[in-house]
Length: 317
Ligand code: BDR
Ligand code: CA
Image 1 (cartoon, protein in one colour):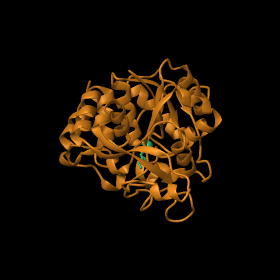
Image 2: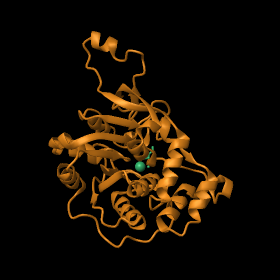
Image 3: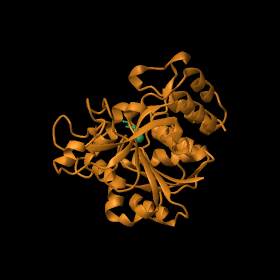
């Protein structure tokens, strides 16, 4: 199996990603680290520990990470993910506490201890990852690649042009993109497409197995103002879980190596990922002697049926 560490802000769809990673035989989930994003970091830690317990993986080390972005003040996305950051599903409190080392220390330890290079999957603001890369740059020698959920080629969600994870901590995202390791960007363009049909979600919700049932509840989650969905409308997006699908089944996406830059200036573009899709990207800038942006493997299309099938087969195991 592929050694994997997920850095998340659980989070409805981060929870879907964790359930999938725990159950997929091709993944060896070595640690999970938490960062402020969908909710405050202590809420993220609580949600993450609970989801791992429900998934039958109570021994995976969980690290508590950054409370706020590198530069910006802390802020909350409660309006999207409920007061607990996970849809207010009324899940039980976890029965354990996180690791006694912080997320960055845990990341360093697990990356360097892995017998094979680790694939990192950040599904949250990139604060922990930026701190890791700056504090312990030696980790890159044992990182296979980083597949992150974040950014957008086209439309944003946090703003008209910026995706939430990058918008929340743009400086951290800029550090990631210049890390010098292979990076895949699983952005909003593909993220929003992968939706599980209502009938499948209904079946998962009816399962007697706690992890499978939780996946169903998370997929069916509707923000409070949208009310309870009838069966046909239980359809739900895989969200962050699609980034984990990409790691075990890279052929599920169509991608291209393209220059990507994060807009850092204050104002309406802050947090935008500028993806250069020109036929010969960066050519004129190189002629002008302007620094070329690092190339990122950008997901442009996704085989929706393939990822839905992969997800369902895995969580119903
Ligand atoms: C991202 O933001 C979060 O709310 C989701 O968990 C996902 O990681 C989408 O923009
Ligand atoms: Ca997330």
